[in-house]
Image 1: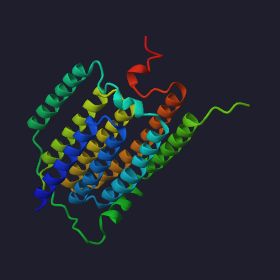
Image 2: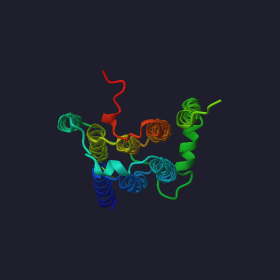
Image 3: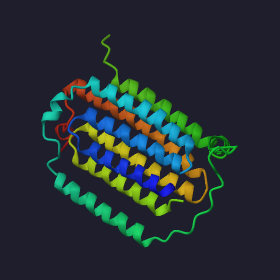
Image 4: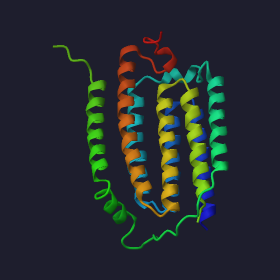
Length: 169
Length: 100
């Protein structure tokens, strides 16, 4: 029963992301990306990453995409819809992407992966995914966690400094 | 159980769609959105590995990637707003002041 749902979510993700890349209007593209994130949250639940699925919806679809939409409203992007959407070198860029696709396909085809372990986790089991993740995050990965908080603070200050109006004294 | 190769293939396809978007689109906001898609494709790969080897390290890394994506979105959008206020441009091939 797991595989059909995986294909359903994967088809949704790929379709919505193709829709996202080809839109001329930026708002439409951002809303398609929200759809990608929602499908991806379903995929994460399927893969046993419940906490990440929640984070995906709360932080990505709820936080980051709202930031994008508000920033789009601050800029005048209405003109850009009527302009040419693709680069002058986009044929060359497509060639580069196709070459990258070939490389990835060769690597995926050549590599032989060892058999996986049985996942000890099941839905509704205690301690669940969130407890286990918190246990790992606050013991083994405490230092990277603190570094990430410093990084977020630096990015916040940088964003405020970059986007604020110049104050004339 | 879904085989690991399915997760890897899905991550690769998403990464390629994002990379093509970054390379081919003119609109700067579209480039940032495509970068978000590429970061998410890495999350799919990490979650697939975490599933395969029953190890939570992959999911912890995915959380760090989400933190980095939030930083990138904030700083990138701030730069775009600053450029847009100054010169009213959103297309990357018109922002060529430092181009030689």
